[in-house]
Image (cartoon, rainbow, N blue to C red; front, side, top):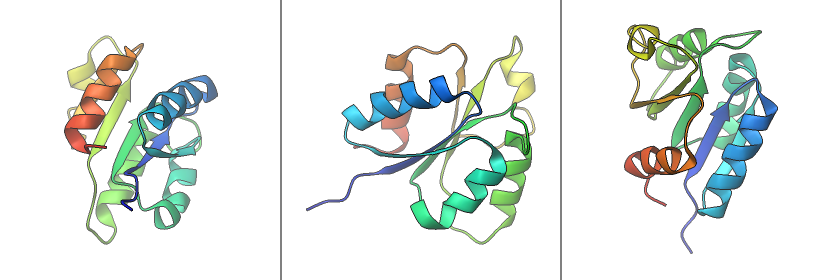
Length: 121
């Protein structure tokens, strides 16, 4: 039996995490959640995600710091898709190496499309 692709959702908004988890679980993905970048770093070894969905603006440790520490650690590194609630999305993500960007609020079809492009279920 094949194991499901694992996705780590990092967002301080519990509602967004729940919606994303339900949407992706229905598609057969294993979803792990963290409320901030520090919690996400602690979860990495346990969940070994195939993709990280990352909010940038969070308390404790923001998405930029998480990405910097994640990329600075031992590889291999999986793609990161950024969740951005910003008027100028490209500027927000200029210093961030991302596989994709989802502007908040996002459509679930767009979420599924970007996830499937990175990790087919």
